[in-house]
Image (cartoon, rainbow, N blue to C red; front, side, top):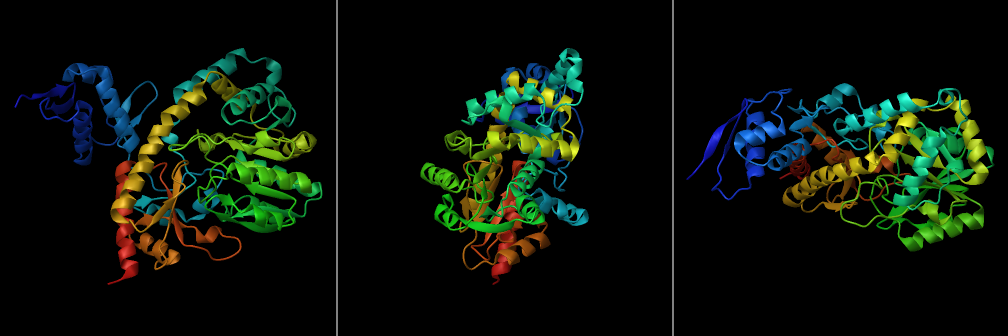
Length: 479
């Protein structure tokens, strides 16, 4: 059997061209085996793709495909300047992200989370994939071309360049009906919802409706602190139950209609229209958290509700799940009658978000780099999601996954014979970090379910995590 064997630079890879296995798969397998065996240690640099391709006698595209797959699995990392290195062991501690679930993840004692072999913590994004080179180009553009007056104090809404860039992007991609004058820049969703609740309370709001289940680290806590009553609206397979909203006597409702947190349900068009009719009848406000809308895999895009009723819907967006939570970049599209009050609340909170970051993001959007980053990341997250679903089908077929068509997490509903708290506790004893749905319910008990965050896990870690969970569940069920 003819074999092409030999080192490329300092990396030995053997290719069997008669094996019937694609060459990029053989390269992947060889590098993966070397990493697992310790022959390639953490931080070791791999040859450039052109060099390795020349040494192996293959096209550069074959090597690029192999490297990209190993990056997606977490074995390799791409560094600025084009260098590819063996990844460090994935730290299991949670990455601080604003939005659903971050405070609950951060509240876990650091020592306990470090004990996990695999952590399915949610509310995180793979910050190792941050597009540093493209972001740096935008930073340089901003520092060399921005007029001096942009670095002075601005009003609470933020810089006009970002207002225009966001409106262009959101109107095109999310179907919003936004104009630059109605945009307020904030430090992530956490600050955005805080500003809105303050303003709604000053406008006389007394009760706010939240999806049940929903996060326990933002609107629920902030509403209570502002003196607002909180009422939970049950969520079913198609999102929030609109008939219950009509009975809630609320002045505002917070929704995640494009990908409900945590169930992943999508609010259908008829229900969206009914929510809008409710808001118009009551003079109420709909706060639309466009959670996970950019990452979709098996469905067509779902447009934002704000485009249906811009005078009654506040649109909330953030770069935390798409780029990195450390940027602290968020935005609100506010109905005209609330813009001045929200901007004033922002000024009172912190005198405005950092100007250079806003201008950099505006340039990043205008250059199309944000679109390119999302196109690059969707297949990465999709492969991780597919690895999770494959593992559940193989090892835990009686769990029922939901919300799988989009986002960075999956909920799996437990069969009636399994107690959610018992499964979570058993998983922890086996070195697996995972959260149940129960703690995020407002009105009381409901079906048991588990929340699988997969965004920062390689495919091998996901497979290991599902196997650990299967062992834990066998322990709970007993002999």
